[in-house]
Amino acid sequence: MKLIAKLILVSLVILALPQFVPGISIEQSAFGTALMVAVFFGILNTVVRPLILLIAFPITLITFGLFSFVVNALLFWWVGSFVKGFEVAGFIPALWGSLVVTAISYVLNIILSEK
Image 1 (spheres, rainbow, N blue to C red):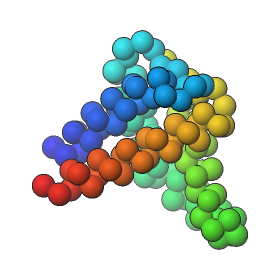
Image 2 (tube, rainbow, N blue to C red):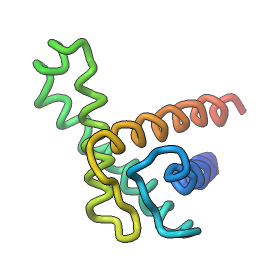
Image 3 (cartoon, rainbow, N blue to C red):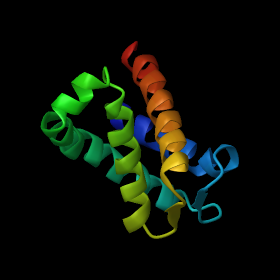
Image 4 (cartoon, helix red, strand yellow):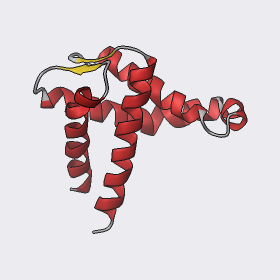
């Protein structure tokens, strides 16, 4: 039940994201598109991100972990390339969008795990 609640809340954040981050667009009132973005971004962060960070461990180590933000932004940008109705205009909007979604997802995780 917590997973469904978190997925719905992250979808609402993604739906509101174009209002705060220029360069990100989503179909008007397309909750289904936002839900697909949340699912695909979650799957990529769970499966692909650890593999990329393992391969890029030397770069991550040299940059004191900051390269993980780049990996997260690239995955967010990648989701924008294959989810119809969701577009990310470039790397900088992808970076800001991924930071907002990740930060709010982290806060939601803390709130939902307290109960």
